[in-house]
Structures are given as structure tokens and as C-alpha cells.
Length: 278
Image 1 (spheres, rainbow, N blue to C red):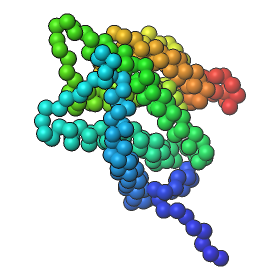
Image 2: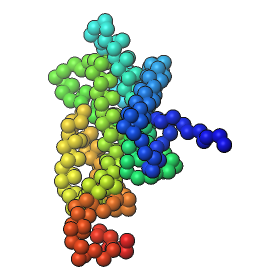
Image 3: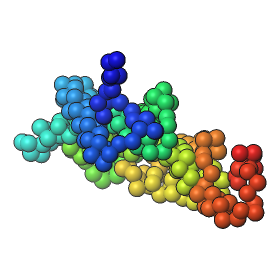
Image 4: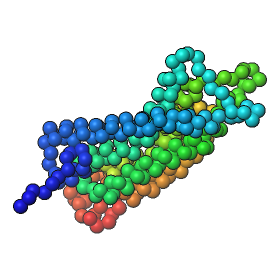
């Protein structure tokens, strides 16, 4: 009988009951890193070919002066070239991110438990959708307000000329940070699934969470009060969403498992958190 074909490591998801040697784990890691690097290279090539369109999109939030488009300046012969390369690189990172997430999830998840390919793709799609939503929120809502405030601040004292390299660095950092902040519910659910935290812990520490959210919004690019408030509003809502999802998908916290295991007299077979029969 012909042996069943198995795809190489790095091109398939390792099942939970599959045992790999250290060398095979390293080989799988190498293949996934190569796949991630290949995705970045292909995305960079595509972004470089579309560099003019991408730069036009990034320049669109700039406030217009007397109805005319703002002009970006460069101060050295090499600055235009390196600015375009940086814009293409950051755009490639945004494009390749879903593939990176898939590779990380597929490499790590077998150590936690068996996951179907459909569930894995659904998780990666949700993470990518949240990141894309954060980038869109930063671009359409936060960025125009921040630029309007910052560039018009002190306009009776200064003549503002925006340098291309610094502007695109500011925009890409803002968009990337906004996208990552929208991953808060994912991080909360991940910690709850690992038993490190719980929905009850998140709920009891909501005041501390708001302080942390405010601090993060303050140190992000921009720093003006308007963009800070705009960033905080969805973060508070996403924190509430994370509490709800953690209550549904979270596991028993580690400290409650240890307390339950150390007191055999209370071992009635019920779940120590919900009290439901095991």
C-alpha cells in the first residue's frame, strides 16, 4: 500500500498529538520564518511598484492651504530615495501581517491544544480584521484631527513646512500603533485562555485599565488632547468587549486551579469558577 503523503513542516499545521524532535521543531521554525520573510519581500515589491499611489493616500489627511494640497519638502539628495523605501517597507509590514499571524499561530497552537484548521483561520481572520479596523480608524478619524491641531498650533508664530521623511514616519507610526491597540481584546482572551487572567480580574481592575489606556494614548504619536480622546473611546469599548469574550472563552485561572488542587476536601468535581459540574 502506498504511504500517505504528508506536507513538509512549515507548510501544514502540526496536530496536537504529533510528536516532533528538537531538530524537527527547529526545522519547522526555520520554514515558518522563511515563509514570513518571503511574504514580506513580495509585499515590499508590490508596495514599491505602487509607491506613488501609497504616498498619495498617506498625504491625503494633510490639511489644505487655501484649497491647495500641502507640499512636503526634503533637505538632502538621498532623502527622497530613502523616504520612499521606508514607506514601502512599512506598507509591506502591514500587508504581510496576516501571514505572519498565521505562521505564529500555527507554530504555537499545537503546544496548547488541538485546533481545527477552520478555527485557526477564523482566529487569524479576526485578529487581522481588528488590526485593519484600527488602521482605518487611525487614518480616517484620528490622523486628520491630529494633523489639523498640530500644524495649525502656533500658526501666528511659525511658518510650518512639513518634511517628507518625518511626516511619513509620523503617519506610519500612528497607523501601526492604532492597529495594535485594537488587538486589546485578542490579548485579553489569550491570557484568559492560558489561565493567566480571567474576566472577573479584568472587571475588578477596570479603573487601572482606563489609566493604562490613557497613558498609551498620551505617548502615541500626536499627543494632542483631541487625538488622545479619540483613541481612548474605542479602547474602552474594546476593553469591555475583551471582558465579555474572556468570560465566554476563558479557562480556569491558574491560582484557582492551584487552590482547588491543594484542598482535596473541596474536590466535588465541579468547576471552581462557575460551580458547574465538570
